[in-house]
Image 1 (cartoon, helix red, strand yellow):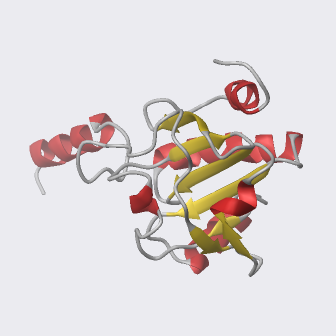
Image 2: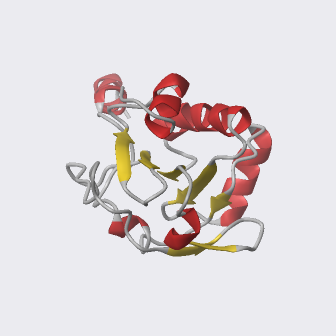
Length: 167
């Protein structure tokens, strides 16, 4: 591969907005919407459904471990998990199996609960493309905020939207 071609490839990788976007990212779920019904099995083997999140604030994050923006967002969500252990956090992979996630979690000292999904069945209820996607949800299962690769939240923003107030 010639120098010009390598430079072109580098520029595309460097300046492509976000990661793992197959098309212009489109979210089907917006603030004010009710969280879509889904059912997954978590890494500890326990089932989790949308109804499991009722009665307390929660956070749902879609990710892939190879995505640079997801890698930036996961430590923020981990910090929230450590600061607010009572908060229900659900990390759901988009087309990524358990072995890759387990390795990434171990190598990066993550303790977040996750559900490995090798397809887009659950993800497609929320969006058409693009990760990360973070949805904060109130106790009535109403989405209070949506963050994506163009707006990776800070810990302070997440605490604010989950525990009263706006950003």
